Image (cartoon, rainbow, N blue to C red; front, side, top):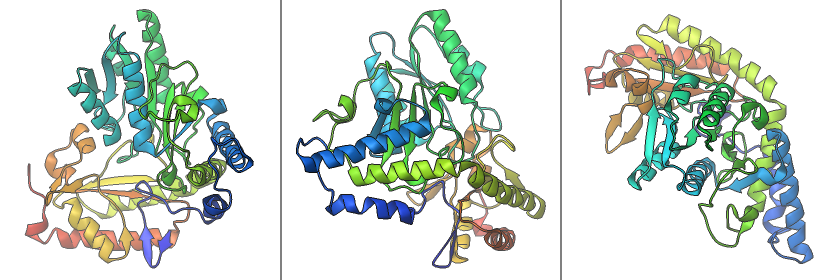
Amino acid sequence: MTIEGTVYLDHAGTTPLDPEVLESMVPYFHQHFGNPSSLHSVGQEARYALDEARERVAAVLNCRPREVVFTGGGTESDNAAIHGVATALYETGNHIVTSSVEHHAVLHACQYLESQGFDVTYLPVDSDGLVQPEAVYNAINKRTTLITIMYGNNEIGTINPISEIAEAIKKRSGELSRTVVFHTDAVQAAGYLSLDVADLGVDLLSLSGHKFHGPKGTGVLYIKRGTPYLPLIHGGGQERERRSGTENIPGIIGLSLALDAANSSREETSQRCSALKDWIIESVLEQIPGSRLNGHAIQRLPNNANFSFTGVEGEPILLGLDMAGIAASSGSACSSGSLEPSHVLLALGQSAEIARGSLRLTLGRDNTEEEVEYLLRVLVDLVERLRLLPSLTATGS
């Protein structure tokens, strides 16, 4: 997608709001502005729109509408799922199992609970970033209450075998005769992978509206009926007392329409992005010496290509691409003036030096072959030039 001359390749970061979605949202800011909790006709008009949006999301997830909870985004959904189940089942156990490559919304939530007396197991992954079902099975003990494993990794694109992990959890929890709840962060999967919760076998699933051309500040938490859960946010008891606060009707409508559209065009979008992604991967590995693909070569999101380059840090690559009109991202986070290596790449067994030289390119439905061709010309030349500058080469930890 080109935005005012920019080749946008950071769709895992955010996506532009679909114009048709925006058009559908506008009336609910000023014309149909009612509070859905109000009994009068203005409020009930908003209530009808809210119910319709909930049914739309439920159809995509293949669940009951009452199992859909609207939130303020993926981070809230992840936190609500983890805190909600952990606190609800605290009297039966205090052990949580997650992986070492989760999004920070999950990792930091688990780390907070550790400070409150919970025990958390951070499962290692293989060199492709995969969480093995048997590893999850073996980690479950008599105090385990919650498993949280992401669907598609936000940095390297690796797709975890969620349904197989669900089967392993079901088997082990049955052997131990205890309740073990399974949550997955599916934020990066929407629009590319099936979100059928029955097929996935999950009890909770998180989504974020702005990842699939919906509005920012909107999210979904699927909570399977009967799942032990205590709300993170207290107040007026909205969302069946699972998430208090007056519902964001324009945002919820926008999210539901964007999710429905993304899911309807999922196969077409995936095929198109996958072809461009394969072209990028093949060309980079062939034309740039010292490059390596991060994540599983096949079992990965169709729009994700993540590379590490020996001898170059990620930040100068990003700045060079930006100067050339290409928006991309890195697996590393820049803080306090120093580039920290990606926790995901470190978990894959990469050195801090290599982990600092990562580049994430994430495609979207509107990217073109011409844009990919331009990217490849720029990137090959850029990495070569940066390697000639000693001050910009990667250093060890």
